[in-house]
Amino acid sequence: MSIVFANGRSAPNYRDCLREPLYKYDFPNRCDGRELLASVKDESVPCVFFDPQYRGVLDKLCYGNEGESRGIRRSLLPQMDEATIKEFIGEIARVLIPTGHLFLWVDKFHLCEGVSGWMPENLRIVDMIVWDKQKMGMGYRTRRQCEYLLVVQKKPLRAKGVWAMHNIPDVWAEKPANEHAHAKPVRLQARLIEAVTNPGDVVVDPAAGSYSVWKAARLVGRRFLGGDILLQPQI
Ligand SMILES: C[S@@+](CC[C@H](N)C(=O)[O-])C[C@H]1O[C@@H](n2cnc3c(N)ncnc32)[C@H](O)[C@@H]1O
Image 1 (cartoon, rainbow, N blue to C red):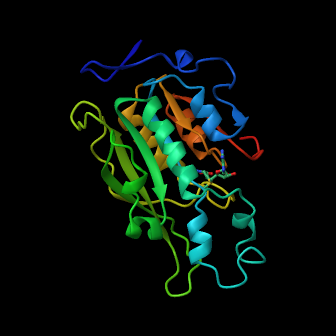
Image 2: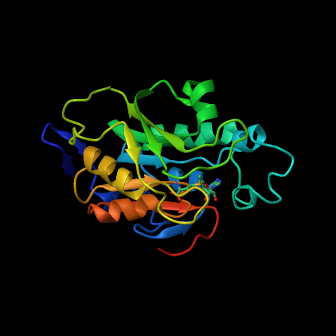
Image 3: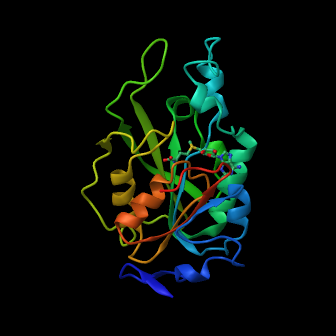
């Protein structure tokens, strides 16, 4: 067991997270993320990132040409309906250690309409970060430049002793990591990983896209366990 922070919160060593060695650590596993999560032991990881492939955004931004020209790269990615997203989050709630953190990416539609219905009883939204991508995206009325990262904690809710960095601003400017349609900011994710894990801990991302979370974990000396249903380029 490795101790997470000084107050006794503990998580198994990363090598002990998997029930069976079906997936590799620090590797782009090609798989359904729900199956990867199902192979992780109960209450064994301190930190999970989840960036769903929202179906709702395409519906809301549909001008008639989405999928044919402007949204082609995005529309080629496998979509997740709400039932699928709930399934992922249910499994994430199971694998997180008590007081562990889920970082959940949401777009402005889900932010406004609410995602609490996706949360099992043992998860609560405890904070939020606005990511300014420093790059204008699509939109008919206004053009999107921000995405939102919900900080979700597994009960018992605690701030003291389970969050090590106290200088992360809740508005974060960083250009996307790469050309993947949904690449997320590596430096922000690295800071968050440092805030809630110890060196050597495992960080999970079950729908990893361009593997920005792996890059972030590697930057700060944490292990990565994740995959994507599509074969993504090696990093
Ligand atoms: C929004 S992107 C993730 C982007 C990623 N956070 C990054 O920084 O590059 C969502 C990803 O979920 C993947 N996906 C969709 N359904 C999946 C499933 N059932 N299991 C695993 N991955 C899935 C898509 O292929 C897509 O790459």
